[in-house]
Image 1 (cartoon, rainbow, N blue to C red):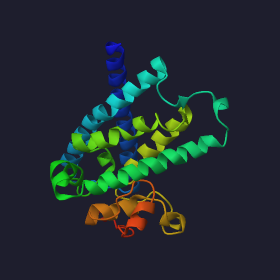
Image 2: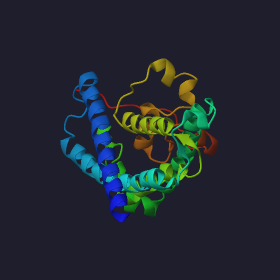
Image 3: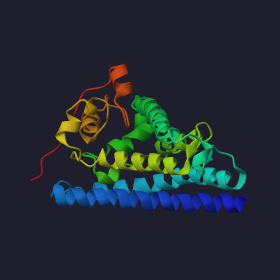
Length: 241
């Protein structure tokens, strides 16, 4: 049993690492095409971002692998694979519930990490990316990576979710994490500056966090920032030469 759990954890770590390399690499390539020169002179920083991110992939993979083994071998979780187990309308609802729960967890742990001691010990690693790049999405100190690694594995014990819906949650998490750090806005102006953008976090919103630190703590939605008075609007991006 221990060997099976270890192999599952290692396999999941590899999957998370490959997912990171493909997603960040893809958005970095898009940046080279759309914004040539944006990452000029940031080679050493990007190397550090990749190193920290691959270490984070290992940390993210361990609880995910244990949960995956428990689901397959013991039926521990509330993950289901038969669409008939719940009404069809529950599928998108479950995705939204996971995003809302993850967003709340992220907001409060992220805000806590901006207190002087946690910031100095852990979160400073992420903010060492100045400016952040597409490779910085998982550039975390191990302690910070651990706070992010436990939330989705914990939720699968609490909220029923179809395996494909869980895949959708992980896809959204990956795309938002990478795109929000890449240094330019991929979403259209009408969305970012319009009513939808008032509630969704995009690169423009998260850029302000990396500019001023004590604001814009959310991950997917601006709800908590607005409720708690930490929303400071949209940031700006550096110009390429």
